[in-house]
Image 1 (tube, rainbow, N blue to C red):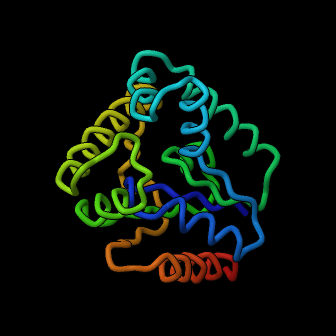
Image 2: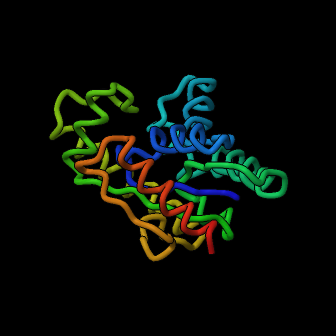
Image 3: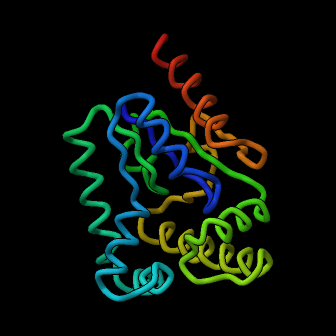
Length: 180
């Protein structure tokens, strides 16, 4: 079984995905981690790589090809990727969201922001810019709205959740699907 996690930046997809994969004994794949590694290799920030990707599909295609290969070869996988639902249409599709101020605060506190934000207000602005740019890019390139919750089987607001609470919700949902 493949479980895909999509969602907004800072909603907890990577943290929940890693914890869920561990709990299930599945492999974990993060498109964001692949993109961050590629950006570092090219001497760019992720924000800079995303700007390049608006003009040149090279970095997106690398991630896409990896996901297509996995779709053909993996059957016990948790995928954290905005396009996971698209590349794994038979997966259990989960969308995580949270209030934008909560997401901004999480990203600032973790220090894993592509561009350093000095405040939550600044982080909110950067998140909105990134999400708008990526949404336009993926709509143009794939014809899908990555934030349309209708693509997903379960939507969770993680604003007040711990990672463990979110994973518990996903796990119960997955178990109910398996029981069918």
